[in-house]
Length: 138
Image (cartoon, rainbow, N blue to C red; front, side):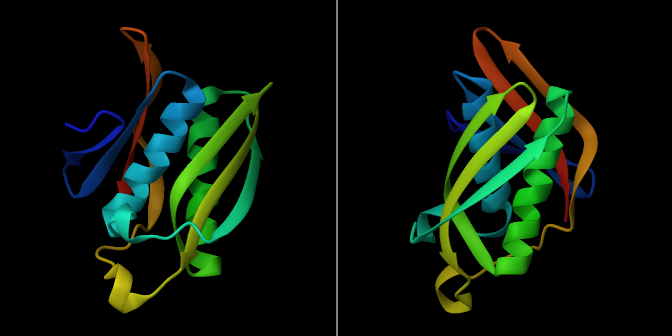
């Protein structure tokens, strides 16, 4: 198991989990886990920075909003990201993602993520570590 993120199997889809010392760190690491469903994050250069903002009063809904907004950016910008920074204050998430334009030869993308599911959704603290997880539809 990786220390900062992992995949876990789920019926026909894929589970992603991010771990961190803070909620923000677990959200950022879950984003890497989401990217890694499709492409190796190590192959992605951090050339372009984008900002993502979203607001939800519930922390689990905020996690889903973060991933959905990130998925939207991947789809519309035709980019992949490999580094994330997340700040959360009063239900407002400001996130930053660094990445590059899609290059089919370089990135060799696999399965496409169709959406983020509420299945197995959890944002919790266990043994002093934060865990943010959900199922992605592939």
